[in-house]
Length: 305
Image 1 (cartoon, rainbow, N blue to C red):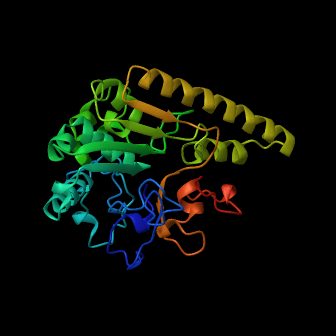
Image 2: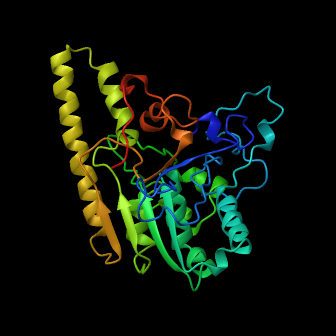
């Protein structure tokens, strides 16, 4: 995502203290399985899907579209870097030095863009080699970004791969976009022999992925409410079919993979924190769940079960 609080841990908008919720909670009633684990939350601050290793100025060559619309008067425009891949690895390395190397079990959870980052670290072989001797299990939560009616939740094309993204899968553009940005492509081409158990949780009608096509339908219809409603229902049905087919085709051969795909619109289920608080969280449900599309403003937060 390109939401400003996600662009830097120095944005001034991150609180000093963050309380874990769901499987990050220390409450035995809320989190009976993992409440007594050591919990580490890595907020998403790199805006690159945890994929890039660009440590020098990142503006694209003249004539190409930039990933961000920089203010030409900004003194910082020529010094913008994307280091998500390196941040991820540095966190794991620091944790290993701090005692993670003595752990028996590790549950690694990636939500939204975080799931994309984890899958790429797994596909590269770095993750298993770094945690060798530790029982590793992975949860990928709401990271199944698909192409639908010309839209993609990530929206990165192949021209960006060599500029921003650090994994070999980013140079695979078999589908016309960097494979590293797509869970479906990763499972089909780069995770064919995985042995690490993975739980994939993703709503069939994930509103983060679906919001842009729906907004276009509402704004461009020029129809009455009844006709627009019918169009929206058709879009939901079509999207669900594409999502289910993508999940089935990409994951059916993977014995170590389990899938939870409820017929819901929720984006992110399992690993949340006070950053997502409804009233004052940096990543409140309206922003994170609807990608800043006001027409889908929720009246109540949706809590994980």
